[in-house]
Amino acid sequence: MSIATLPGSTAFGLLTALFLAGCTHDSGTMTAGKPDLGTDGSIGADVLPSLVGQPTFCDITAKLKPSPGADGGGEGLPTSHRFSLLVDWAGNTAVTGAGGTASKVNLVQLDGEWTTQSALALSLSLAQDWTVGGINVVGRPFVSYERIAIHPTADGCAGSATGNYLGNNSDMLFTIPFEAELAGVIDQSAPGFSILPSPATTIHPLDLYGVASGELLPAGTSARWLSTGGITVPMSALPASGAQGVSGFLLTGFALAFASTYHLDLLPAAIDLAGNLAVQPPVVTTVAGPGFFAQDGFEGSVDALLGGQVKAVDATTLPIPAGAVAIRFAPTGFATSGEWSCNDRFTARLAVAPAAKVVKLSALAFRSSYTGPFMGWLRLAVPNGAVADFGSYWTLSNGTPLPSPWSGTLPGSAQNTYGQLTQFELALPAGTGREVIFDLYRPCTEPMLPSDGLVIDDLRVE
Image (tube, rainbow, N blue to C red; front, side, top):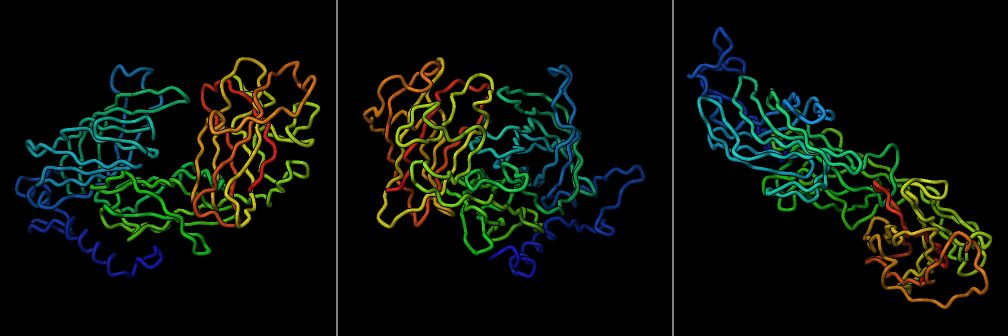
């Protein structure tokens, strides 16, 4: 079932009816769907049973402030945080999730207030590896509510909380303790989705990490990208178990295609636990790709995407393994320079003959001072299909040394030393047809560790 067909579907109508049945309190003390209040606005003991007889889907806004004594005065703490909480007053449980997390905790009720018995951690990004026993740095920042004390109101719920904001700034991780006031209404808002990383306009077909939901979707919800041409690309749900629901999706082991538009398709429906339907699913458009790479050893025009400071060089500057031209990734240091930059990248579209099995290339490492091994993330990808990931240190293994084609003093040897010329054979991904995407990407880290440069030549499919 596609998103476009949901509003008139039987499944949606049933879910909506169940939601309305669960969130309407009918006790004889109700007026226009709300209980009668005392003159001071309080909820009388005779009215309370009508509010807690059914679970409440509460759309909560938490007003956060640093706890007394927080380091740096709590600088960096958000002033508010919005999340949904399904409170089963009679069953003494609460369920929530966001950004790939899902949690169910027990509650204890005393004097009309329900208090959580364990923490609820909600990712503001996409938590790929989060467990009840602890929080992995993947997916930071988190808002972790260590204790929530909550009670029902005529419109939803209210209460207070304490917790920690787990953030990061570059390579620095920090934790800010906070206090919060909670005010919630019955959840009637559509679920919101965030594409990660958030594209300014278009996105590289290998750069889409996943999609985060701001709240839980029903257990068993799946997601895929659906192109305007009807091609589907699957994603995996988070958390993987999904017993309480799902709140994120990873594009793992698959790539999109160049110059294509996709919309997020959720099955069986794009709804949250309260039955609210997403009105407009996210849409992504990928960058226009280059033409097919000539596979001539870079001797002609280089039809590829060259990012950062990656460029074609000739034998006047560096040794060229074959012919007169190759491309180079410069060595990195602790600070950027005119020779390298963050996000250095080379992406090419390679035509694949019917009997081809591997991608081949020659590579020569070089350095101008003490560095570590070349760090560059190498992947082969089928457009709208599988990705073969060779990792960041693929140059350390599986290569075949080649005899040196040079004699005498090598160009650039006054400032560089050179490693062993090596040939690499990379198996094509499963399902490869007439085309494979070759992508070598050096993402930034902080601090940026020194690493070798690399001369690449003779890129071809055989």
